Length: 215
Image (tube, rainbow, N blue to C red; front, side, top):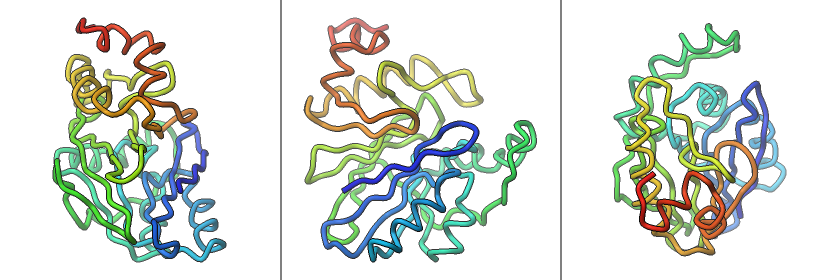
């Protein structure tokens, strides 16, 4: 089961994923709402065993230091996003967002690898374009994917930040998102959840891709 918590200047979604064993959880993209997510984990009797990052933009790592301190869980990030991680303190100053710089990530995410926690498994899919080391987490047992800022309900991630590239993002959507079953629920970094089928049909950025035309 996936629980969503939204907060902060950028209305970013932090996710608490309750694993199959009913005791274990993972925290995905601990932004401003991370304290609410961890309070929910405590109330549900869940032990957070890992902190997974789709990418390292400020709004997605805003409360990583807090989450690591509270849980002791290792932080996982794709190494291609380490420059973005290192730049977060500058971004925080630019936006006037209080930010506690976290310690370096504990583990590198590897494209194609499978992460297993509490009887649940997620495949790491490399999906750059919004950020150079962006990944998505695709459940191997349920029609679910945590997609960060690759795709949203009716929109796509921005590509005007350092390391962003529009054509790379569109290729990531084509090769990593649209290939999933249409019933797959997509949990994005901002806004409501959606499905692959809904975005293939109605997302104005994505529909041409699904029809075979590169936008």
